Amino acid sequence: MIALDIDLPRKDDNGINYISYSQYTSFKSESGFNTGLPGYQEYIRSYFLGERFPDAGWAQFGKDVEDYICERKSGETFSQRERDVLEKVEPLGSFQIEVKLWLASNLYLLGYIDDATHDLMKIRDYKTGSDNSLQKYTKPDYEQLDFYSMWVKQETGRLPNELEVCGIERKGNVFGLTDRRDLLTVGEKVTYIPRETSEERCEKVKNNLLKVVFEISDYYKIFKKYG
Image (cartoon, rainbow, N blue to C red; front, side, top):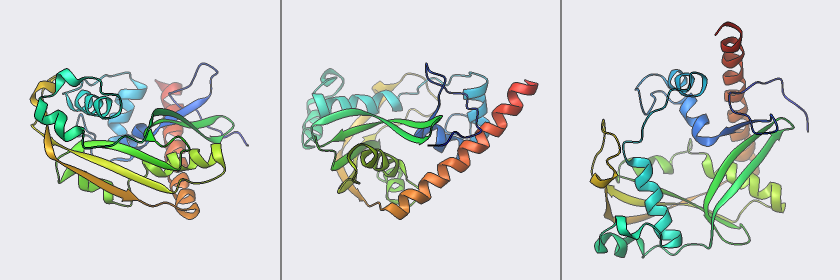
C-alpha cells in the first residue's frame, strides 16, 4: 500500500493521518451545522484552530437512544412511552465496532459501526431526526455505510449482505441552545431505510473521500506554513 503526500490535522499516536466520516461530510457541506458558514470554513475553525462548538443536545440524545436500544443503558433519560418505542427495535448484537479502513499506508478512515451481526454480514446505523430530516439517508450522497462496508470487506474478504439505517423519530427543538437534551423526546415512528452498495459504488465513494483528503491536506500545509 502506497503512502500519500498528505498532512492532516488529525493523527494517531503513531503519527498516521486519519479522517472520520463526520470530518469528511463537514468539510464538503454547503453550510456548516454550527456556524452556517461554508463547510470547509467551519472545518478549518474546528480542526485547524481548535474552536469547539458545544452540543445543543442533539448528539447526547442520539447517544442515549443508541445506548438504550443496544444495551438498555440511559433508561432514566426516557419516559415509559419512549422506552416502549425504543424496545420495538431488535438490536443485531455487536455494538460500536471500531473501523479502521486503510486507504494508504499513512491514511485510514476511523469510525464505529453502531450495530452489526456477529459475522458482520448485516450492519446498521442509528439516526434520530424528524421525518423530513431522516429522508437524507435515502439519498445517494449518504456514504457512511459504504465506507463501513469496505472495512467489512477488508476484514472478511466480503461486502456485507445487508445495510440499513434505523431512523428514530425525534421530537423537540434545541436549535441555538446549549446542553438542552432534556427538550428532546422520542416520537412514535421507527423507520428502516435499506441501503445498497457494490464494488463500483465503493470505489466511487473512496475516490470522493480521497479528493476531500487532498483538499484538506493542501489547506493544512498552507496553514502550517503561514499560520
